[in-house]
Image 1 (cartoon, rainbow, N blue to C red):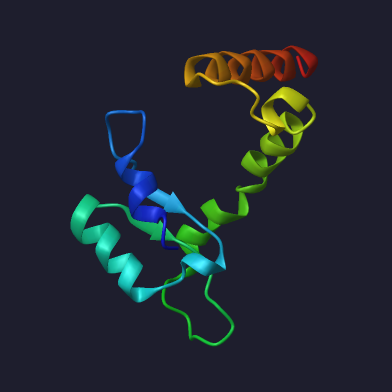
Image 2 (image 1 turned 120 degrees about the vertical axis):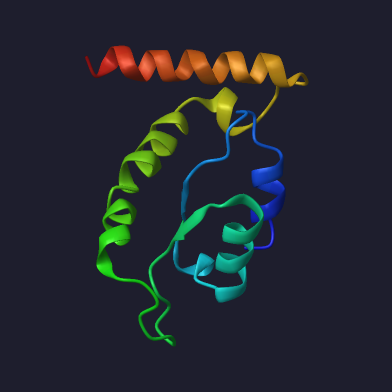
Amino acid sequence: MKLVNATVEQRFVPDVPERLVGDKAYDSDGLDEKMMQDYAIELIAPNRCNRGPTQDGRPLRRYRRRWKIERLFAWLANFRRLVTRWEYHADNYLGFLQLGCVVILLRHL
C-alpha cells in the first residue's frame, strides 16, 4: 500500500488509469481518498475481514477477473531471463518481456 503513489507517478503511459484493482491490502479509506483526490482513480479492492462493506458488489466484478493478469505473470515466470533480471539496461529487459509475451501469444493461438 505504501508504494501505490510511487507506482502511479512512475507509469510509462501518459494517461492515468480510471480504476486501480488491488487485493485486500489496498482496502484503506486514506488510500481511497488520496487516489481519488490526487489522480481521480477509483480504487477497487475487496473488504478486509475486520471492516464492514465499503462498496457495493458491482465494482468488485472487475476484481474477479484479476486472475487473467495473475496467470500472465505465472506464464512469464517460465522465462528465466525475466524472473531474474540479468539485463543491465531497461530497454533490453523490455524487449525480452515483449518477446516473452509474443511467445505466450503464439502458443495460445
